[in-house]
Length: 382
Ligand code: SIN
Ligand code: CO
Image (cartoon, rainbow, N blue to C red; front, side, top):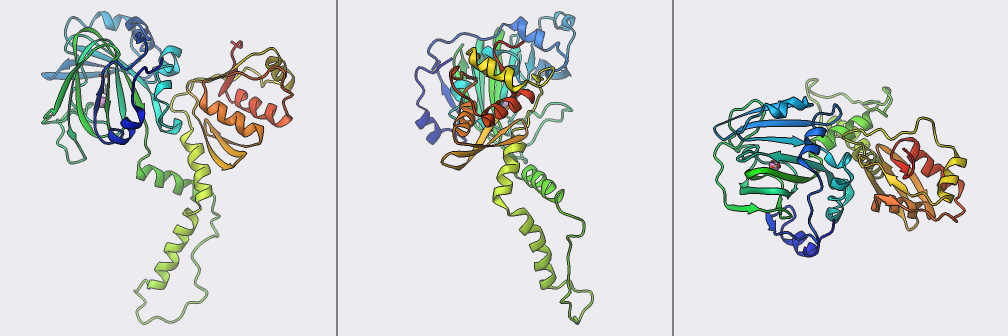
């Protein structure tokens, strides 16, 4: 799927993280990538996260999946909505929907949630902590957007849903298939299906919170420090008040913390690895590790490499021909032609290789490691 008309530079400078934007069908040739029945089928699978929200503003109940197929037949004619997480990990055409949004870096992209709603169905007025593009796939939905919220915004008492108590819309639009609404983090929004068979694709983003960054990095650093590394005061002198923790002691204690946490290169490596951990697993690991010989044979046959849709690929550049590739919680140092290959893996879901290329041992080792950890597979393999 491709955009025919969408001014990305204007969008980034005026809207991204700043203001909601309605984009009327910018696609070259919009078609809904998933049937409602297929979505319901996914919601019945054990390894797929899904929920049902039944009712409307007069009262809502939530149920978590996986569901029995019969459950959908029992829902009746009232408003309800089914929401399924990370559908892009299971349906290649839904994964294809993310490609045009890759003007945002890989590490900021989360996954695609898909919703199906009957007339009047919706999750209610709420805000999310992340940017989202809401792509109308099928049918119509009325979206209302309100002001930016924060932790002080009053919420309705509800066990499962974080609904805004007094939602005041500032804009309202009815979206048709192909239309997109961009909502920046924390802006109040509410979508209500207009008619049955309303499907919405949420291209969601991620942004680490300051507290989770501190927690994760500090835990990692702490795990590498020996117990014997501790406060010392061989230069202790007599102090007037034994109760005082002196400024000298405080400075030394604070230094112990800050010195260990301030290594930016080590932080970059930890962050890249940590951020590339998959949220939901899709096990593509081969039954037995791929041999160098088998790998070379696949390349010589012209077989292309496919990226596991649940895998997260990103890199940091260390030099003109050197980078550190992060995939699914692991890091790989890549130099020369391998650094070019690593960047191609990060930029493309399908990577063709030159069948006539004389691959180096390092290149074969890199591709082999990525195949064996289930992040890549040759397209002809089952
Ligand atoms: C929906 O698709 O109904 C909800 C999406 C959202 O508001 O984030
Ligand atoms: Co939302």
